[in-house]
Length: 291
Ligand SMILES: [Zn+2]
Image (cartoon, rainbow, N blue to C red):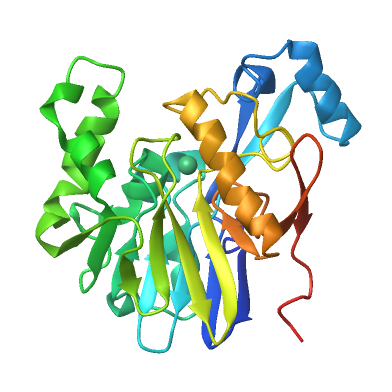
């Protein structure tokens, strides 16, 4: 008997007149959570918070959630996942998910990138050719300038620099470089949310009075990062700025009770936050969008 590999998890919901599809690009296991989240805390403090939340203390699962926003006029991909580069590790399944829900890569009109890390950009190319041949592209002006700068050579950002040269620069002529408040399509705007990377963006979508914020990598663990936004995160380039941004973005989302899609939140990666003394309580989406 041949093993049957089921299609990747996909999850669809309506937001105003948009249809949103979240695809699980994949997930992987990371060792020693305390070395990543709360890297400036005692390891026992991090482990205690995990245990209190019924989570294993020695390892964590990190998942990846690119999304498709169908406005009726546009089919927008928000972050691409790992693409072919991740497939040997069971990642890079976004393209398969996109097809499984009935889209073709040719139908994608816009690819919007919150930032230019590998898990967000590696799916831009497929077999050396554009993965979404008819799309235009949008990313942050500051983000693009940082990663394409030759000054990254010989620094810890050199690997990222090379990945951007290979995967993003080929699309420069079709790319819009976004500044604070710039519109990607009607109803979808970019907001600067730096810290994780120098020009990291979040996207705000509004459709028929309904809102969704795509927070990218502003917070990357639903307990360790949302619950303790002031803890340092190893993956954040500027840790102090990332903390400030995390506070600001999720304060706004909590105050206005806006749902958000967080790229590394547990699938389907959509939820709400409530403000608490030490941080935010994550409330995953259930049927709020079905009524
Ligand atoms: Zn990421």
